[in-house]
Structures are given as structure tokens and as C-alpha cells.
Length: 119
Image (cartoon, rainbow, N blue to C red; front, side, top):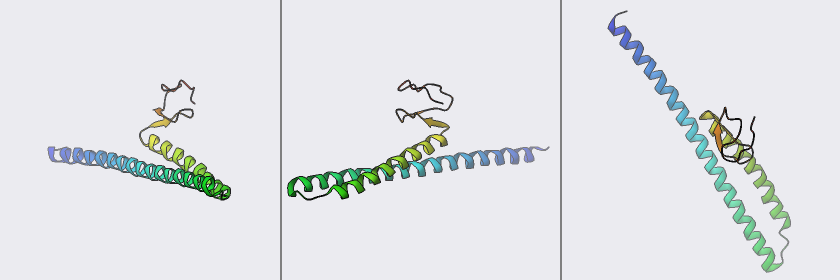
């Protein structure tokens, strides 16, 4: 193999490595943005619940059904956020502690943050 072929092969390997890392960065960034969007929606719902509670308190309006709707949506969003955080950590070859929701290394048997045994 001459030097030109060797340089070409090494350049190809480097290009593949860079492409692979760029895809990982892109996937992680997209998952991070998605998680931030879910968090913003959650914060908006908390504000809506607060407004409905204030309205119920000041006007004696019945806002229970409205609040139940917000809470059901919150439950769904919190589950979606948990899944998105797990996806983000998987991209980085990590997992999320089921007890404290903090990222940990995949091989850990116990969470270094809270001490919970993880599978």
C-alpha cells in the first residue's frame, strides 16, 4: 500500500468518526431542546393551576374540572419528561436513577447520589 492510499484510508476513518460524533451531538441537542420544551409546558400548567385556584378562591367559581384537566396533562408531561431524560442519558451511555432522577453511569449498581440500588 502506498502512502497516498494510507492517507486516504486514514482520512476516511477520521471522517466517519467525526460524522458519528456529530450525530451523537445532534441527537443529544435535540433531546435537550425537547426536554426544555416539556419543562416550559409544565411551568405553564402550574401557572394555569394557580390562576384557576385564585379564581376559585376570589369568585367562588367552580374550577375543579379545569384543574383536573391541568393535573392530568401534568401527569402526562412529567412522564414524557422522564422518558426524554432517559433518552438523553442513553445517548451519553448513561441511565437515570429511578429514585432521584439523576444521571448515573450504566454499570453502577447503586446510585452515587441517593444510594438506591439500580438494576
